[in-house]
Length: 222
Ligand code: C5P
Picture 1 (cartoon, helix red, strand yellow):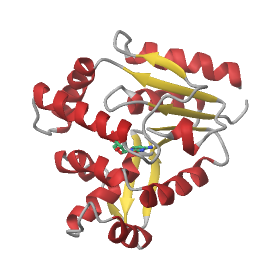
Picture 2 (tube, helix red, strand yellow):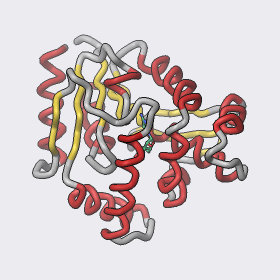
Picture 3 (tube, helix red, strand yellow):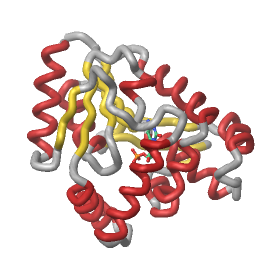
Picture 4 (cartoon, protein in one colour):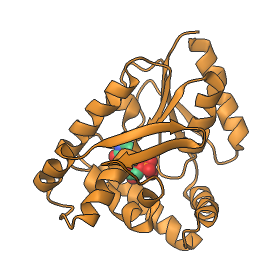
């Protein structure tokens, strides 16, 4: 089988990471969650009291930071400067601030180079916001995954309950809508469907159905 690249983009809570993980596991591919990198930078910046609007200071910090994504049976572990931050980067505080950090072009440039390096050999499923449009422009399969904002908030709520993060559906819906807006309207590689991406609406699909749909498309490219 060909070691293809599969790019999955879409707004927050569309099911990208859950579905990407299943697809990767089925194909024996590596799953890479690029959102975790932006979250890792945000988490470190907050803990060091760096002003999140200060692109220069963030860049200096990032150039002195080791971010390691380690594939694991449950998806992916994230280490920053040797510390396991897999759970910490999912906090409400990081989630509320990550889009501001991700809007800086200089920060994106550094992380995108890292992402391209990780994907270079193929056999990967990578999810994010700009994977099909920027990071992996030549990916054999590009998916733009979405779902209604109500459904996405509901899924996040269930996910948060499982993780023990307090939230309400109403607040989540607001937070998701705001993050979508920031991610779609920023100057640097905004969230947008690539021309050659296939649109997949997961509102009415189960996780298995959505994964099955992508697996079918992937096999046509392998
Ligand atoms: O995927 P996740 O929701 O964890 O991503 C967190 C944030 O990181 C997004 O809201 C977005 O601001 C940023 N991001 C990005 N480009 C990517 C992945 C994530 O700008 N490729």
